Amino acid sequence: MAKYIPYNCNQSLLVPITLSQHLYEGSLQETIHIIVEEKLDLSAFDALYKNDDTGRPAIHPKVLVKVILLAYSYGIVGSRRIEQICRTNVIFLALAGGIAPDHSTIAAFIGAMNEPIMDLFLQVLLICEQMDLLGGTHLALDGCKLPSNASKNWSATHKELKKRRGKLREKLKTLLNQHGKFDTQNLDPNIVRKAKLERQIKRIERQAKRIETFLEAEEPKEGKTKKEIQSNITDNQSAKMPTAHGVIQGYNAQAMVDDKHQIIVHAEAMGDGQDSANLIPMAKASAENLKQIGKGQAPLEHIKLTADCSYHSNDNIEFCEGQNIDAYIPDANFRKRDERFKGQNRFKDGVNKPPKDGQRKQPKFQTKDFTYEAQSDTFTCPNGCTLTLETKQHKMRSGIFRTYRIKDDSCLNCPLRNKCLTTGKTRQRYICLPLFKEQKPLNPSQRMQRKVDSIYGKVIYGLRMGCVEPVFGNIRHNKQLDRFTYRGKDKVDVQWKLFSLIHNIEKIARYGMA
Image (cartoon, rainbow, N blue to C red; front, side, top):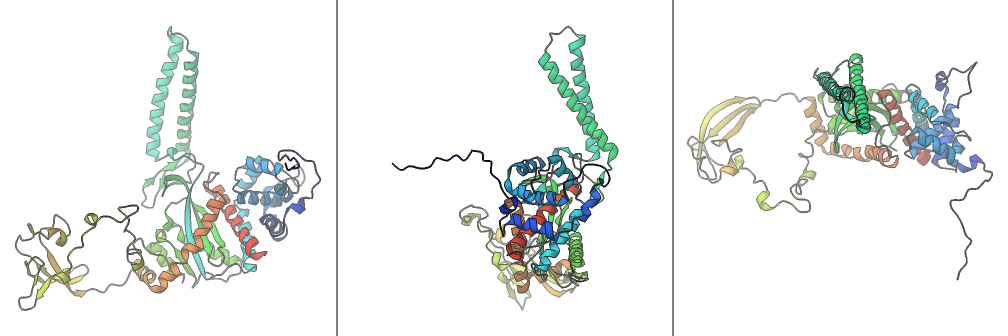
């Protein structure tokens, strides 16, 4: 029988190690170390500390930035988990130089990064530009709605919150009366029930006090229509947002991505679930970022910008046209006009097979199915009924038409009624022939429709998905960002920019350093 040397993976060893030897060449850890130590200027963080003359020396911002970026690349976002891994993982020890920051230091550092984070982001973006990782010809914009550290059950209008506060006070009054019976009446003492009642009273008191404090401190939020929308007591800067998996209370994480190597040009967490409201601020911020890294005074001029149909609006299209941005933003019905998606609903009524013939919608009769008689100036329907001239010039919103109609009640009992009339309430069939169509100037939405429906527009818009979607796949799946752990737009925005930073640094490690 073969003999093997026994081994134990759970044993502890006390061996001398050199920390720098664990940052392997070409790895993400080494790239983070080189960029933070040699490339980035972190003097902006000096304003966060006031220990020049007195006080304990602080952990260097370089150590904290390296540790946080590496932890986020592994999907570790909790400050306590980061503290734990800094004490046990040799790679984190190597990045931190043997220092293990505690969780309160890490959490406070991230919370105070709302101003320096943008400077950090621009410096990494400049490194990407110096390494020729930016194409500068095509940008794609998209958003990802993620839950925040807030409960949607605490969302309501001020009127609803006042009503809820009144109900809590009434319930509290009832519970206090029940609690008083234990002392005033000759009841058998039930310690367990009394203690449970006391805990319930304290909980309701806290809820009522929380609502009252919020109503005193915050004003009602107004929507785009100047009507009040729901506020949230836990995080009032977050919003309710519909997603494919239901309604969430969270933020809309936006990213503007360059097409060449999927570098994030600008990232920002928005408290608005409507993507159409985020294109203009994202475009302006992206232009400012590109200007800061030396891309000219008008970096978005004549650049291609693609975004999905949720960003389609007249304001966004007019903004792009005014800034000379070559935008491709389709409307919600652009697939219905595309011949390539003609059969996209063939499995709509069945999972693995098309709908049965009886379930298919029967096509309606068109004008070409009616026979025109030039001598009598009439039309004959497929059932043999005659449509006579009703009006020679009927003016409508879209132009001037010549109309023909069946005069009698032949359509009521016609066997072809379902294939001829649009609805069951329609009594008679009529035909409108255009004599003159008013040529109105195209509005921004119509101009964009023609642009996207062109052959060139289809090709350009087809590049959008391969540009921006892998970025969200990397951050959400590989980095495991399924929710924000902070409250308030500033802190959530810091967390989103940190994930965008590590995404860009990964691209530097993959394309630049190699």
